[in-house]
Image 1 (spheres, rainbow, N blue to C red):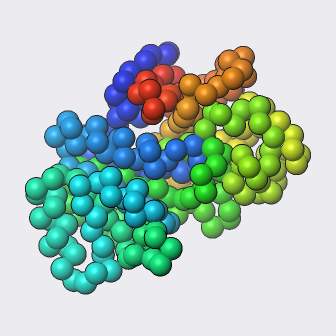
Image 2 (image 1 turned 60 degrees about the vertical axis):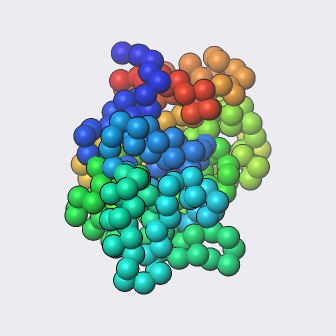
Image 3 (image 1 turned 120 degrees about the vertical axis):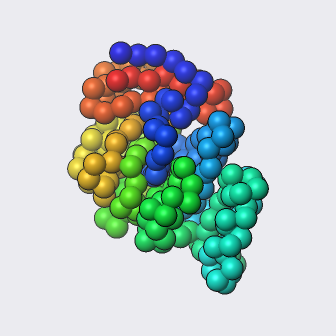
Length: 253
């Protein structure tokens, strides 16, 4: 079954209350904030964060940034911001690099269990801006209470060479998929990353719903390769093709 929607939360099949972990590459930060904005517009209370690091300038897309490491008053500040704006970003502390240190999985679990918000959305790994990312053995850092894990890849990588320019942790990517250095990223190779037990869903909590989100469909140059990729992945789990930039999502179930 295939259908189209402009509602990102609907495309991802979110329920009235969910803890969403985004992994992989291809625009996780953009997806996180787009999803948060949509959910807030529907009247939900939303908290965004990361278990890695994020640029402070990006975090400021939320109405307010709460720093857990600023002192014991952070909890009171968070409650006040959520009461007023229904949406905040929470991080650990500011770093000299201009980034914010993320929160621990334990804190993410506590915030979700305490029902502070309707939705907790966080990035569970980094991809250094690449469209495709293979996780190291210690990644991603997914909290145990995550109810949805969204594995992402940017479709502009299809047909591009398997190099550091397009793939973050290219050596690990080749190890997992069997690809050779410089080999074109064909659909079957990208599908291996998404399906491998140590691929993008590594560390996915038992019982969490798995979703594959292939972003930037507007940048695909060879539609036959896209159709081939969909043919391989369709039926494995919920599959979403889309473009956050254009706001259109195609759901395959």
